[in-house]
Image (cartoon, rainbow, N blue to C red; front, side, top):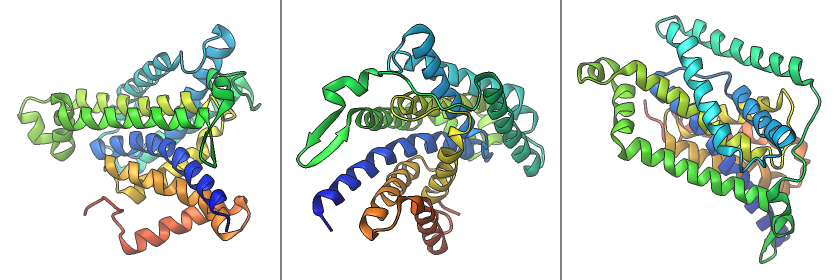
Length: 294
């Protein structure tokens, strides 16, 4: 095994792993707060990527320039989703909750295909792709500038979310509601408002991820399906409701996905099978995930 090739694969795995972690943390935040799995998570990512694409096509705004607007739009969409759908099924059976978010995902995907066709699209000449010639070299390892920027932005967003939840009064209120909704309400915390905020923040995370992914990934109505599947595995691997677990699991999934074909010499077409196998091996030993608890 060539060491340079292995280092290149490791670096690439860590970069995409940071994006997986950012996508997954929004999912784990919503579940940790309300114990509802958002099966429309991938479709929200798809909408964020389209928002970045149309901002570039119609207004000549680079995805990095339109990123704040994309994140704000997704935050608002998350709040509206909670107000319009989730708040009405909070006390419904679990299957009703699953079908509600799953149906929402199908609806959004169909809507995108109806209005924008199933064609693959891409942002033309994004700023990051032309920066430093599109890549930077660290020793013998070559890193794409868009991928590095995506990982850095994911890290900043992840740190900001963690500090907000762990250090701010509103973040502590979110934790209190997640721990015991009834007691938090008795302490004067508006649980309904916290749930809306949690959905807004969870969907805003995929807003950041979608904006940066649009600089180097194709955009089409079903683009969120694969990323959502990886996110579900990442959340379960890290432990449902654990923000640090989403980060560690995202990095591990990225490494396994990219490094395993290089390390063992099989076709990259089987990389997802290896990721799923790795997940199953971990949960057989630790069913609650790496950072989860019963």
